[in-house]
Image 1 (spheres, rainbow, N blue to C red):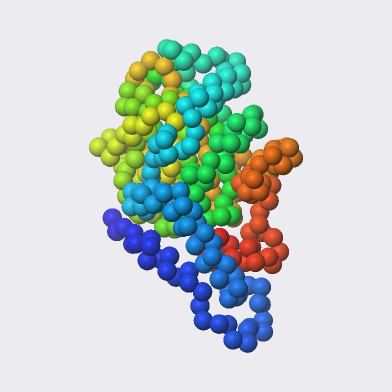
Image 2: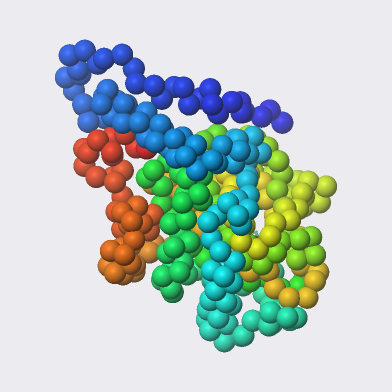
Amino acid sequence: MADQPTNWNAERKSLRPPRPAGSGPRFAPTFLADTEALSEAALAEHRVLREIERLGLQRHRDDLDEQGYTVLRPDETGVSRDVINRVREKVVAISGRRTGVPVDEDTGQSHSGFATPFGQAQWEPALLLEDPIFEQMLMNEAKLALITYLLGESCTLNHFSSLVKGPGTEYLPLHTDQNQSSSPPPFPRQAQVANATWALTDYSVANGAICFVKGSHARCRAPNPEEAVDLTLYHPLEVAAGSIIIWHGNTWHGALPRTAPGVRVSVIEYFQRWYLTRTEDLSARISSAAIERNPERFAVLVGARNPALEIDTLRSRAAKLGWFA
Ligand SMILES: O=C(O)CCC(=O)C(=O)O
């Protein structure tokens, strides 16, 4: 299979502003690249890369470039074990309330019969509307710096949901997120969608860990039906509760069945570029109180504002010219 070029750093150089535009075009100026907007796109790139450096996340940026995924360990997220436990308890309570089936955290028997697109797991959407603690998770600095590196400053949520996975025997086949909610193959090399999953319980082989195929994002296609179930390609990711697993939307991933008693609990924050259609549109459902109590970027992330669609602003022009704006 012919892989596409992986030198992402080299590609980025094309964002430098070009020579002065001279007297400017007479027709269709709204549709043409202008020097000011190109400079703003280059500035956005600079801001995004500087933020990565400020937070000491260069290794994670390189992981995303080279292997298509990375893990922020609990000590790198700035989130305490107490908060992670509270979030897990909330997810467990919400999951039980929504189906009327309380989660049996000890045996997991309550959750061995679930079947969703995410495997033998209960999937619950629109979690962000349930409790302000989820808003804090969304605004997590280190996670957002890496998601912004992948999807630019104008990116938005596609869905904010949870998974509770009980014991079972079924593997989740290898797939790409890009394939489900963005353009068909060949996929663009620049991420169009990206996933940040909070492990709220430990991930291990027996606990039904997520698995990745290193470097598969550069193939710019989904696995074919044989590859999707080829267990030799599954490389389990064992991480501690409180970690955030972040991946490029082209990266092949699947999951092992859980063989141990109990449940694996996670929160999925799934992001996309500003021009894609969302799975869950929270823009009209999010409260004005939530918008007010959070930083400005929150409104963009939940889709209440889309700066890239504003008419003729510098930011909207820049978002159409650079991957980081
Ligand atoms: O967490 C898992 O087991 C798999 C989740 C997944 O495939 C996804 O979020 O796209």
